[in-house]
Length: 116
Image (cartoon, rainbow, N blue to C red; front, side, top):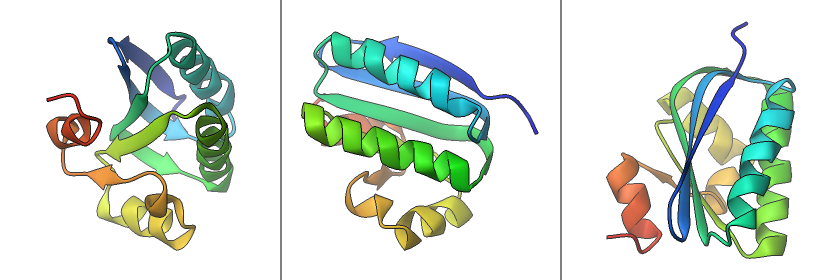
């Protein structure tokens, strides 16, 4: 397993979280810290970049579900890009794609947030 690396890019009403490594229970603290920092800046949209993620387990999926719940309570829209076909299927199976749309690339994800 490769420890998760989380890089937060904050902009005006948007933030991008670049992930690298494995999304497991170990990722929870770092992902929540990034989310909380971004939400504290009153962002409206948070985009997760999964391009450099090789592994997501059930605990990692639970972290994403918890982040979704928090974002819905705070009025923050979540987006993703870079999910492998396999992980897109898993996100779809658990219902996450209904609430966290996946896009082909960062540009498309940004456009969905209204950042043209």
